[in-house]
Image (cartoon, rainbow, N blue to C red):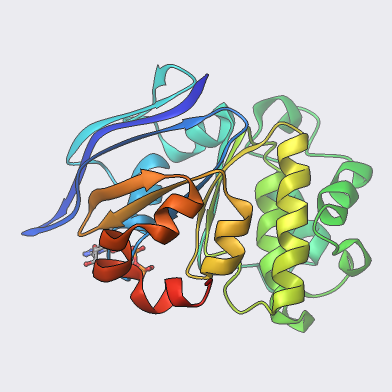
Length: 245
Ligand SMILES: Nc1ncnc2c1ncn2[C@@H]1O[C@H](COP(=O)(O)OP(=O)(O)OP(=O)(O)O)[C@@H](O)[C@H]1O
């Protein structure tokens, strides 16, 4: 079943066409990699899906419903969540309070005033930060700050998680551990789209890859086919592909 469908998506910033008539689907239960060089439009695609940006043209459907013109909080309540490239915890709140804040968009929970401590601890435990719940986010190492961003997204109980550069700044052991955690998210029924420059980490994780260049789809297919695709190698990934071979 196609959970997310991006159809003929275009996003212009003045004269710049950041996303150019792009179409792709994400199957339920899949982990899809969205790759491409700097400036190829990956983050803009996520921003359009989440209605952070208003699209110039095209349609975004989630679970069969057109969500193109929905507001961001409505999209989150439908079961979509995004972990952005930037970490932005609220420094005056503990890790627990930061996670709790993200349980509020879910309308059912908000009647009860948010999630239980047990639920919050379980979101934290899914990314190994359960021992840091009472800490100030400013005191956490980089990897834990990134994990907190993922825990915040988990707190919205997503069916589809958009992850923008989740491996950035992590060492190989941390990348492997995070990949295992993404696999366990999948076992819980979460579908994922992952943008990252860490090709080794990404190709080991994803089922399928969509390659962007200049906002257009250059190629899509199995990770092995994409790594071996000369067009992709020559034009876009030369340096990064050599790292996985
Ligand atoms: N708010 C904005 N206003 C103007 N131009 C923008 C805006 N957001 C993105 N762009 C431009 O759109 C293009 C695509 O940017 P985007 O950040 O989506 O690429 P990306 O593939 O995510 O890059 P990176 O890998 O470096 O994060 C770039 O030329 C960028 O400068």
